[in-house]
Length: 83
Image 1 (cartoon, rainbow, N blue to C red):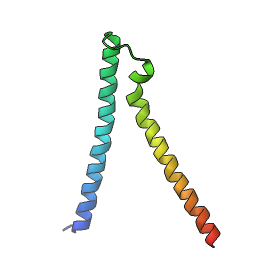
Image 2: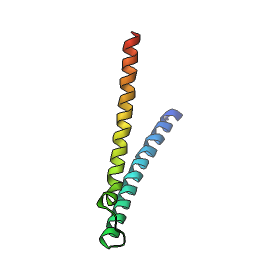
Image 3: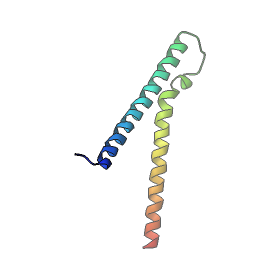
């Protein structure tokens, strides 16, 4: 029988997958809604705003990745100075 830590880890992984799936679906749905509204003439937005749900998600992940890499780099520099 699996112990509670293993079960908790499995539950966390499942929730993480659901969250990623929901975010992808939400951005895709928003893009399609904006696209249909633009093509039917209901809204007169720039194409940048129509495609915003697609590229804002990607841009936010890139920013998060850069912040994490910066933190790792700073921690490495601090550890080298202390040695």
